[in-house]
Image (cartoon, rainbow, N blue to C red; front, side, top):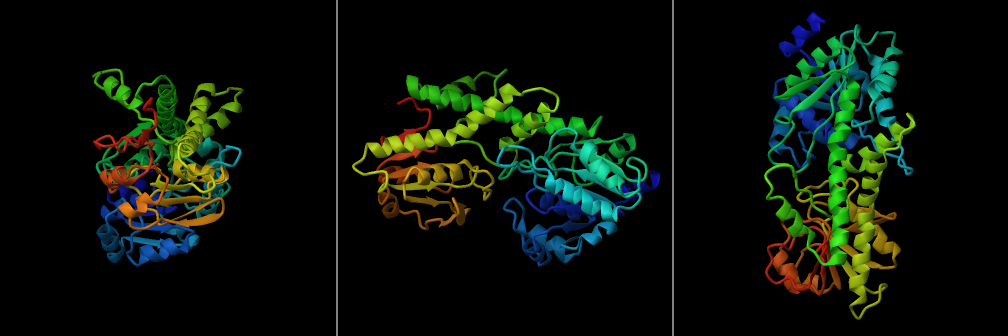
Amino acid sequence: MNKVLNKIKEKNIIVGVVGMGYVGLPLALEYAIQGVKTIGFELDSNKVDLLNKGINYNQDIDNKLIEKSTKNKLLSATTDFSRLQECDVLFICVPTPFTVNKDPDISYIIKAAEDIQTYLKKGQIIILKSTTFPGTTQKYVLPILEKSGLQAGKDFYLAFSPERIDPGNKFWNTRNTPIVVGGINEESTKLAVEVTKIAIEKVVPVSSPSIAEMEKLLENIFRSVNIALVNELAQLCDRIGVNIWEVVEAASTKPFGFMPFWPGPGIGGHCILIDPYYLSWMAREYDFETKFITLAAEINEDMPFYVRSMIVKEIAKQPVTLENARVLLLGMAFKKDVDDLRHSPALKVMELLLLEGIKNVSYHDPYIPQIKVNGQKFDSVKNLTSKLIKNYDIVVVTTDHSVFDYEMIAKNAKSIIDTRNAFKNVKNKKNVVLLGDGK
């Protein structure tokens, strides 16, 4: 172990990152910036070609950093997984979706582990970063790797260290966001911590991979539960005539014991939507039902249906049928000012409107040029002008991008449904129906 530790401290290592997406690319880039030769392993040949040409495809990364790191040969990408054997450290950063029945799909993790096992060598450090349920590292990844004939914790080292990526965040990034690391034994934890310290400023060791796996779920389920609380209260406030946004703002004046969360059309991104179902699936193995957590997830998933009802209600007030109504959705990304479409509630809203028989549904999003809903492709309408706005019966703000001219929209739209409180600072908003406004 000491020989491996010395190589890490001298940065005399090659880092491999399996999966060059939202998590893998920023991590790989950070090691390259720190002077460590880094290889990205990716099935998507288009991403590989772009990176090897020094072209960035991640909105949160400085284009110049990719260009510089590839030019000086510290960062490269490949579809050739036999090169895994060149690496001293391997991070697994692959997707972990769920099935249509909300069961975990760890097939990408299994495939990555099998690829690594084929080329596993003594002294390698394997760190799983993909969000998953407790026990994945030790029950699934470890046995696959040990099929190589090498012993975990002795011949090679294994740990789990969950990603903490917040798309669009201008302050917290890969480098300055603290990271948790838990190895299968003391040696694995120590080595995984040391190698992570090269790229991350603060690393927090925990006693096992299961602790690290569970704490990641806790982070996101904490948010899921609290968002569900305000989403349910928003629906109640609509009935009793109270503005939920003002309620949350008032509660936020308390300097202790309260953290503000805001309602919306639903939740998106990779983790918050998926994590509750990963935990509930695992819990059933132990004859335990995560009732509270599952209920919160269901409330959040119901919000696009509530937004659909709001839209149908507003259409009914106008001299137009559902079939002929023209609806414009503003924003398709799952959060403001990003190009991340993963599990965006806006996609579900659009799907529901089409199923409702509203044929004339369009969207505008400067970050998302094209989407696919119900097997049909839609292009973002261009040039959000007053003339364009006037052509629609209903304008729905599903993602509150900063680039939208809300004053112009309020002035020209016949009717607006605001699911994000985007028109908060607009003076003349008599035609705006706000989710959770109570009016």
